[in-house]
Image (tube, rainbow, N blue to C red; front, side, top):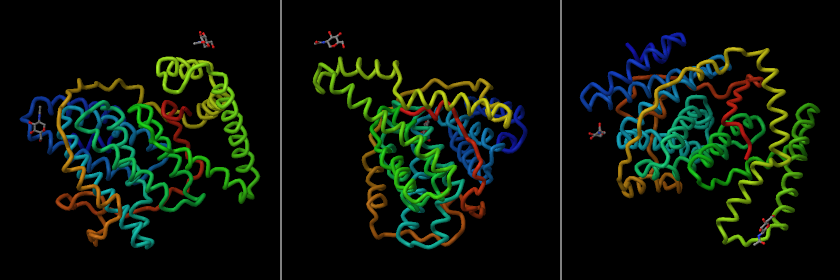
Length: 347
Ligand SMILES: *[C@@H]1O[C@H](CO)[C@@H](O)[C@H](O)[C@H]1NC(C)=O
Ligand SMILES: *[C@@H]1O[C@H](CO)[C@@H](O)[C@H](O)[C@H]1NC(C)=O
């Protein structure tokens, strides 16, 4: 009942339900945590189907609070994340190999995207975590694979959501993730784009990126240390960050204008973020997950042992498929603004 309230009720009730669930979970015998988390995850998936500017903060709230629940037991978090991420991988592989419309739709839908965002948020938040670390590589590969599945301008909004989460993951876990190529395709788009309004904005960004690139190249030339000297290198990076680059300055100005616009548009947008969610002390669990990691290998490298998926319920493990949900392909609402400021900062 509490999970139902947490996932469907109005804001205050959602927050209270979560607090009660959290408190109950720490009091109940251990095996209940597994049960609670499974049901919360299913509720999250079910309720992220219809995404809109007004449901976005609610989904975000579920995402953040669910990660707080997972933080209670990282080895359990690993078990769940492993199973569910593997499911995502299977759908993606099917979409790549079958090349059919409905297999594409099993990936290009809000539920799939919100699952990726959830796991990415989990890895960002609980880092450094030796138990969750082995999931980094598969999750990043799946996210990149999803970006590449249908790389047409129609799906640029989807791509931006995923790039944003990858940038956050990269920053929070100190991991290099090659996202730049997916951003620079923006350049190809300009050659074909015929809609003045889009061309103008993209051109502006491209100019700033080029200016930024020149700025960095110049600063590097003037640096008086070698690339192997980590101490001065870190100082140099820190200095550049503090000073700001042409792109970051442009972004700051743009963000101010945009926030101003939004303030007069969607007022409730980030309201749920204002509640102070309790955070859970993280325990470090030492485990090696080499064997499990191997289970991903075939999937990521596109082996042939395809797992057939007849039913409509695509990315829950088989034992949990009483739920039936269809798959809306993409939101056609081009004016969605999901500016999660904290996540939007360009590096
Ligand atoms: C964490 O979950 C695992 C797997 O379900 C369980 O064996 C373990 O006892 C749990 N640990 C705690 C501290 O609840
Ligand atoms: C390198 O340049 C900085 C100023 O840009 C200076 O503070 C520092 O002492 C120089 N280091 C060396 C080794 O010349």
